[in-house]
Image (cartoon, rainbow over all chains, first blue to last red; front, side, top):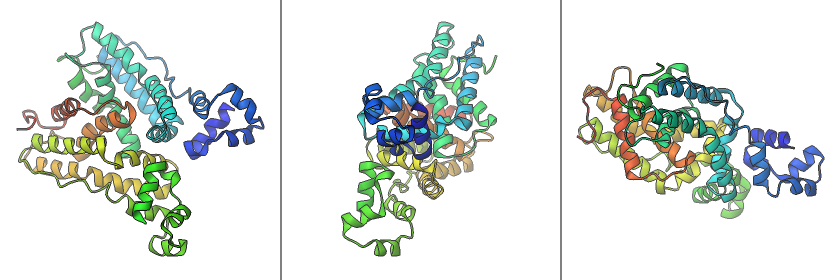
Length: 181
Length: 181
């Protein structure tokens, strides 16, 4: 049922997902579906649970190394994972539907969790610039990557990703913190 | 008809816009609509034409001043203009529908045009860092602003916008180019 839901979501965006259609495709009654998932948003949330589960964050010992690893992982997902095709539909739905705004917030928090982990480590080592936190780190890296994937639709090549990491370090890291050392 | 189309788009996203529904609401026959707009994408493009028409770019005489002005204008649009609610729907549709990917590309080019204008001026004055162009300037500024509006859904306050402009200048401008001077 979750696989069917995700299938519908990938193929037609969130507008393509209805409990009726999931029931029809899976051969399970709507009553049974509603017993497990009280709402369409709840079913969507579980079907999308892989979106919020990026691979574990490597612990390279430096903020520069960690940021490069997280950025590379995010870029790889944006280039080839199915969630990269699905997320814009949830972003759009979040503009109009409070339940789906809640779903979006959970998925977003999961996707950004690695930035929180590495920013906490960096702060403990004194590597963050004064007044900068994980929200700034995420905006500085995910911002340009998301922009490139969904808005300008240019290729997310390795050179662009390195540039983004170097630029982010120049602004959110304490002076003297180097890329990938 | 264009107003009706934009109304449907704002209320329900791109899935809510059909030629049938536009015909029903406007009382104009589908044949007549198709005579003016050969496809749904063509109708949507004209209805969205205001999205790609930001206000004229102030010419402040410096890259720092121009970038601050463009960023402020974009942030204001993201905070309060109707297109900020409409664009995610077009981004989503562009993932699956080549016609709507074309519509998205036109709207995006219009929205980003001010970055091209000010980057060209900056290059002529020798204010851009080596190897950096208008695509880098746009990604460095629009990236974090779009991220904040549609992904993290945090407030796009003036302090965040100034930070983004200062950070972008530190990376895309030649060393020594100052904010708002």
